Each structure stands twice: as structure tokens, then as C-alpha cells.
Amino acid sequence: MGDLVGEALVLAVHGTRSPAGQAVSGALRDAVAARLAGVNVVLGWADVLEPPLVETLREIGPCVLVPVFLTVGYHVAYDVPTAVRDSGGVAVVTPHVGDAILDAVAERRAEVDPAPEAVVLGAAGSLRPGSVAEVAAAARRLATRVGCPVTPGFVASAEPSVRDAVAAARAGGAGRVSIASYFLAPGVLPGRLDTAGADVVARPVGTHPHLVDAIVERFLAAAVSGSSQTVV
Image (cartoon, rainbow, N blue to C red; front, top):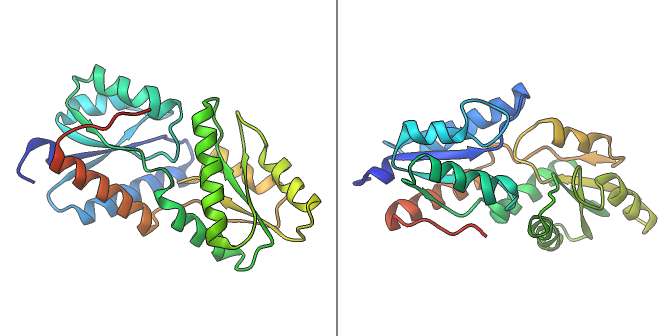
């Protein structure tokens, strides 16, 4: 790439004890690496797994860091910048992935229910109002893609719960309710979508090409500019 920061990419991911979730993270790393010849692509765990992100950054040195998260929750707003600072501040941090992968979410949902009457966008939840608002905005944008009402629902730390959102859709007259998964990989929290009472539940985004595209685009933009983005 011609400069040190463009020779390494750290994918900051949540981490999970689920073997299936860990396998998806590894496959995502491999898919991104296949698109970026000569770039050292590594996973950096923001939570749950070891080594912690700060140690990964210390080992890698100058790099681009892409937060592979769908909202600016605690990990994106605090853990990532703290790890960058404590590791020496040589990582260029891009914007988080966010709703750039909504087309992938829509396609995953269409796999299980091509003609839904109502959809609940099932997300993790957060105590940060901005993160909850991001999911609500994503639900509104998803509705234009699927052609039916889409409401947000959360499995923790925010309201309405996914179960309540499904129940509200039925009370509103929907005979068939599907859940679109606003998760990137299997794990404990996405597993709760299966017990929320919907007719069908889509699988997480996983290694969908739209997610790989979003990561690669952020890396290339940061590697060229060499300047970090402010997390708000």
C-alpha cells in the first residue's frame, strides 16, 4: 500500500464464546483478506475473548482499525478509542460499519420469508440513546426495502423487546411476522431472537458480500487519507 498504516487492518469485533460465532468472525477476516492482497488482516476482540483489543494493537503497530459494529454503542464509543490510546495511538479508526449492510439484512430476511406482512428488526440494544436511535433509523430504511412495516426490537437494555414488538405487530393485524436479524454473527444475544414468537427468524449477516464490501471500502479510504474519524 506504500505506507505502514495501509499494510495492516484490524477488524474490531465483539467476540463471543459461541464456536459458530467465532467461526463466522474468522471467515469474515479471511474474506476481507482475500480482497486486500498484501494487507495483514487480523481480528481484535473488543469483549469476551482474549487477547484484548489493546494488546492486538500493540502487537500490530500502525494500522487501520474498522469497528465491525452496527451502532455506536459502548464498545465503539469507549472501548475502541481507549484501546487505541492505550496502545500508542497509531491506529487510524474508520467509521463503524453501521447500516451500510442493510441490503444484506434485507436479503437474509428474504431467504426465510419472501412476502412478509410485518417485520421486526431484532437488535442487541444499548443504554446509549444514540445507539437505539440508529436501530430505529435502520428499521425505517429497511421498510422501504421490504415493502411492509418494520419496527425495531431489542433483546437487552432497550425497549421495546423483540417479543413485545412481535406481539404489537400481530395486534396491529399482521398474520405473519418475521424477524430480520440485526446481528453480524451467531451468539447468545442473537439466539434470543428464536424465542421471540415470530413465524420465522432470519440468520445474522455473517460473511455477506455487502459486509465485506463495507469493510474494504473503509480500509481503503483510511489507508489513503491516513486520518482517523471522530466517533460520536
